[in-house]
Every structure is written in C-alpha cells, then in structure tokens.
Amino acid sequence: MPRSAAFILLAAFTLSVLVRLPQLGRPLSKNHEFCTALVLVVHSVWEEDGFLKHHGCPAVTYPNPGDRGVIGLHYDLTEQDGIYYYVSHLPFAYWAPYGGFKVLGVTAAEVPLRIFNVLLHGLTALLFFGFLKSMLDDLPQRANIAACAAAFYLLMPGPLWFHGNVYMSDMAVQLPWAWALYAYARLGTIPNRGAIVHFLLAIAVLAATEWIGVFVACTLLVVLIRRWRSTGDRRWLGLGIAQCALTAIVVLACLGLYASRIGWNDLLAYLFHRYEERGVLPGEASATLLQGFWQLGINLLRSWWPLIALGIGATVLGGRIRSWPAVPDLVLLTLAPALLHLLVFVRYGIHEFAVLKLGLFLCTGVSVALWRMETRWGRWTHLPIAGALSLGMAWYTWVNRPGDGTATGEAYATAQQRGLMIATEAGPDEVILLQGIQADPQIQFYARRNMRMVADSAEAIAVVKELGTLRGVLFEEHDGALQARRLSLAQRGTSDQSPK
Image 1 (cartoon, rainbow, N blue to C red):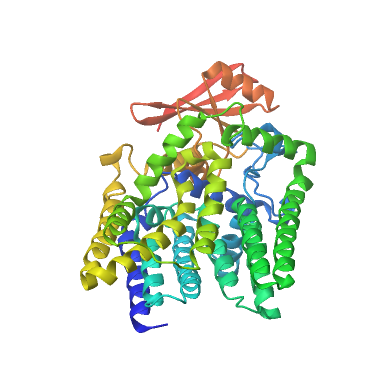
Image 2 (image 1 turned 120 degrees about the vertical axis):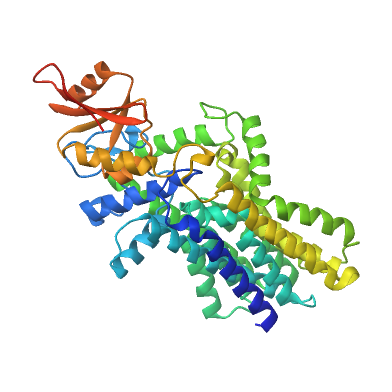
C-alpha cells in the first residue's frame, strides 16, 4: 500500500473514532438505538439462560417466571413454551459479537457492542479499499482513489452513526459484503484453490448475516457469467453456480435452525407477515409504497448529503468519462444488490440505516468522478474533498450533539433510568405492565425484564389473569416520574401505590 493511501486510511479511521468518542458511553436512547438494545436483549438472555438452550436462536424472553409468555417484542407466531424469538433477520450478526464477548469475558453492554461496531466499520473500509484498488488497476493513482472512497465511507454522517451507536444485521452485513467483493477482486484471471475457498467463505458468512446476501449472490452470478462468456473459461460459470448454491444452503440452514424452535409453519407465516409490512407486495403495512420511496429519498440525503453534493459538483466539472472496462462490473457489484434490496423491501426503507447499502456505490462513484476532476483541476480537488469530509463529521456531531439529550427531545438517560427503576421495583415472579409508556427494547434491556403495554388497570389485571399468574406490577408515568401499582388477582384489586 502506498504511503499516501495508508495515511488517508489511518487518518480517516482515527478521525472517525475521535468524533464518536462523546457518543460511545451515553445510554441507549434515540435514532434507532432500539436496534442495539434488541441485540443486547438477545445477548443478555443467552447469558442468563444459555446459548445452546435456544439453539443459537435470538431469544428475547428473560428466564424470570414473571417474563414467561409476556409479548415484549413482536409476534405470537415466534413463541415456544412462553419464550419469544426475533427471527426477522439471519443470526450471524448476533453470533459474531456474542462469541467475541464470550472469548474476552465481556458482559453484554452498550459500550462493548459499540466498540465492536466501530471496529467492523474500520475493517469494512479497509476491505472496501482493497476491492477498489484491485478493480481500478487500469487507472493511475488507483490506491489513492480507493483510499478516498474508504475515507468517505468512514466519515459521512450515516456511517458514523450507524456504524457506531446502532448495531443490527444491516450494519454488520457491510463487512462480509465488502469481504466478498474483496475476495472476488482477488480471484484474478485464473483463480487458484485458495482464492476460491476464500471467496466462498466470505459468501457463506454474508449469507448467514443478512438478506442482502441473496441479492449479492445473484449479482455475482451475472458478473461471473459475463466473465465466462468473455473468456470462454467454464470455471467462472461453475464458481457462479457454486456461490449461489452455497448461499441457498446457508440461508436454508439458518431458517432450519429457527424452525427447530418455533416450527416451519409458524416461521413461514411469520416471515410472510413481516414481508407484508416491509415489502413491495400489497398488504397490511406500516407505510405505503409511496411513503416508502419518499422516506428512502429523505434518508439518503440525511446520511450522505455532503457526498452527494460533492458528487454532483465533480460530475459537472470533471468532464467526459473515457471508455473504462471496469465500469459495468463495479456498478453491478456495488449498486445492484443495494437497489434490489431497497426495492424488494421498499417499506423497510423507512429505517434510515437501510441506505447504508448504497454507500459502497456512492463512495466509489464520487471518488472516480473526483479523479477525473483532478486531471483538470490538479491539487485544488483536495479542497472540496476535505470540505465534504469536514461537513460529514460536523453534521453527525450536530444531529447527535453531546449533552443530556434534552436539546433534541427526551433526555438520553430516560430509558436507562426507567429500566433500572423497574428492575429494582418488580420481583422476578411479577408480570410487568406499562401504561402510557412504550415497551421499548432499551427499557427492557436496562430492566433485564420483559414488559407489555396496556391501556388501563383493568386490561392489566386481564393480562395477569391471561398469563395464569397472581401478581403483576403496573407502571405509569406521572409528571415525569414512574408510579408503581401492584396487582393481585387474589385480592381482586390493586395496592401499594408508590411514586418513584
């Protein structure tokens, strides 16, 4: 690696860590941190109840008597013996940090998971650099172009936040996707056995992490078929078919693991129900198709606007693009999987982190456009690059500005304080019910308990009766403080009102 490229990568990663330091220690609260909390709920359940007991499936029910059967996170269809599972996503994104924490003896908590996420961000950028450097071998300054793209991926507002404080399979999958691209680029003109094994290993990890792995495999099949037709070497066709078959096997194995807990019928019914909510097909959903596309556009600007503005300027000022054989493969590999995922799961795009998947394409396209611009404008090109990177860090800091959080709404520590209070107040055999308070994953993680929302005390008593228990605790908010009321079916009433 040339020194200039190494300096760019090291400086960009160092800046990405420094600008995030004020956020790494704060309590779970806003801007999709419910994703991080959900993963930590799964990890803490495994810590208390055993990973193997749940067959490695993402269990979200704590092993207390008062938690059994409480619908804390999502649907009846994922229940087995009073334990609920969150099976919307493939499992490797849960396994990887949990395995690392077990090896290091680290307890599931916000800061370790955020550090893990930041390290994944850095490795993703490094593999992305390696992929582009190999693919751009016909361009001068290819290492610096690739390093510039990696720096954009490190320092734009979206990646800074979602590869820092928010962890879920959508963030975790960026690493195996970049790894698969890097392994593909390293196959060379005549792949050897070691390169093929490396490529297939990356494909397997990608397929076990997130659904975009299916779209990446389909895209790679097209690219490998093109290589077969241009070279006449049937090994490229065989490799394309093999990686698709491996993807199918891994996905089916993961689904089979989930089915071992909840059964195939309920698993398929659950997945179809979720797709009605998130997908392109008509059905009951949290957003219409038009709302999904509109939100996608807004999210794209929020996460990437400094890069998009720079790309528009570089395209206008950079002049005509010359003939370049690498363009079709680069566009296919970085854009097609993201577009397919966002179109097939268009109503999933209401989550801002969904547009992370467009990052590899955006960073690649802008960096190449900037190289064309540099041939005309020379070192002056470095100024807009530095400006865009600075704007990315500044916007991230402004949106997620340090402090107690009240400048952007509810205080950062609210969920933590409520969860810890609930953990102290409720006994392990008592059902926890919330009135006027969302049963967010953040509260459940801090409380290490499951809880359910109810409309009033009458519904709360009905829920306690439905669960076949005798005791429950109803928590209500009054003037910013939680008030606990104990429910007892034996007394057919409520007692022990104590504001906290």
